[in-house]
Length: 87
Image (cartoon, rainbow, N blue to C red):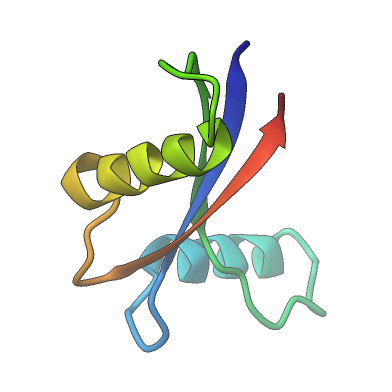
């Protein structure tokens, strides 16, 4: 059984978001004057084959948490959310 997990990574509050700001400016230049803010974020969808049957969802979330700490997110500037999206 494969479990799909979605990880959304966002900049922490107060961290500059040049990609979001540039996108907002570009939208304004294209005539979308009512856009007040744009925040950039990344989403990863990871499919994992759990090793054991019991407590598999929690173990997968723990594994993905470790992936975030080691590679996917920079804990100094990023917050992230992990959610199971498909069993």
